[in-house]
Length: 285
Image 1 (cartoon, helix red, strand yellow):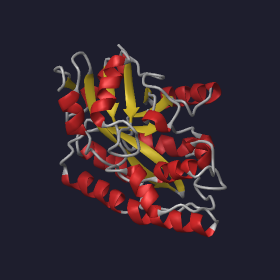
Image 2: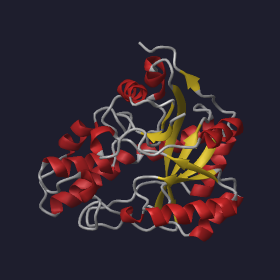
Image 3: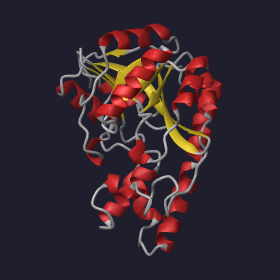
């Protein structure tokens, strides 16, 4: 089995619609794909309707979190999307995205960059607006060559010249909410140091004690040494180890199935979850 547990669609900051994403996942030879848009489940229904035969969909979301000033992401799988507490927190995070993006645009304009809200809103379309959309605007304007280059201290990285904070969930609260909604919580790309400061291992140990289920180890932003370190830490703490592409369509260079999750780990995730269940493809529409 080939299992990719971290992808994004136009419901947040990917460039493929949910339907396009699952069709591409099937064509790429995946057996299981998780749709984990930022702080939203809005793409799930479209993905399920288009799900090709032979592909199973894991419903999920990537939750925006912050610990001691460090931005981090929590992958939540197979939770009840209508559970009131977690739903309210996701809405709180999403509602802060527009004023945050407008604040970044104002800072960029102050730096002499002719970016506008209309341009960023056009790029975001119906998705939850976020930094990658602002980064894409910088690429369109020729300020940076790629989206990844926009995530630097010169521009949009944490603490960068055009960075603006937004509401982000305490990760311990995120774990509590996800587990309370019957889901499974996995710390996304915990060693992605190129994005900024990373959470110390002692904090990951505290999260494990609080109910964290796993860590995403095999990821494009982790080099071989980081993967080995995180794999050892996961073993020490009794955490599941996942692997994923973090696919965003054309917005990033990663491809579907670039990194995958062991079938036994996937089986354990499905055993732990009770808020929702994987959806087998029925041929799509």
